[in-house]
Amino acid sequence: MSTVGSRTRPSTRPKAATEFESRPLVNRSEVAARIGHVARRIREELDLTLANVAQHAGISPGMLSRLETGHVNPSLETIVALAEALGVRPALLLQEVGEYEGGAQHVPDGGGLEVVRRGTKRGHTYHLLAAQRGPVKVFEPFLVTLTDKSEIFPGFQHAGTEFLYILSGEIRYRHGKSSHLLKAGDSLTFRGDIAHGPEKLVKVPIRMLSIIIYGGAASD
Image 1 (cartoon, helix red, strand yellow):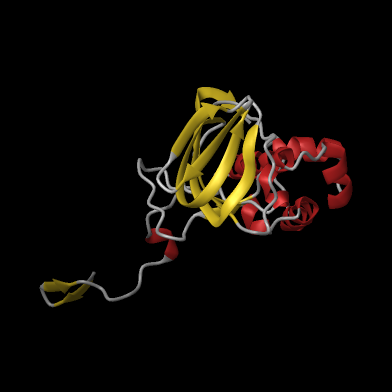
Image 2 (cartoon, helix red, strand yellow):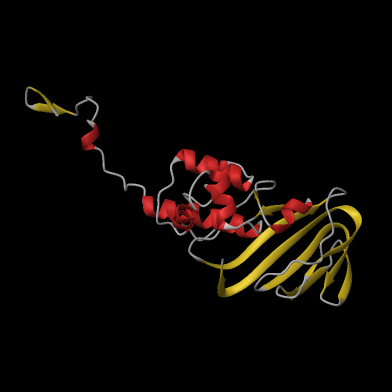
């Protein structure tokens, strides 16, 4: 404050940096855990071994194991090398960093994050419609797109229960010994641990909502 006679007026001098309220620092261990969690998930989705990925990334298997479990903070160079070894963009490894902690997630049309799963190498495109915090997955919602370049593969298996809802196109989908012709508006719910997947792409492009429900009992 500056004084003019007996009157005072606010000072127009900018506040020094030390006068601003301090902001919480980034939790580096949490960032490392999130990067490691994504790296491990992508590696397992691609059926790659620790040794194979570590070799292509130029690090030791032990270092990669520590990175995946969040016990080491990877450098930018390591993140880029690891992304190249996994065949993904470096940004994918950072997808869980800085997630909003509120109770709702709004994903606008076309805003789902493209992620890597087992079907990616078969021409299946997956966009994640919600991201979860914590080490245990409860559910995963995906927008799945299949085109004339996609391969059939009725051999997917995973934990939990899966719900499919066909948005457009037509597909023959196998689950175990049963085969189902699914059209737009149709849905199918099944156990994920029984072999399943597209048996015939009847009418492409096919867009479907896939929700895998783990019930809080499954982890990566």
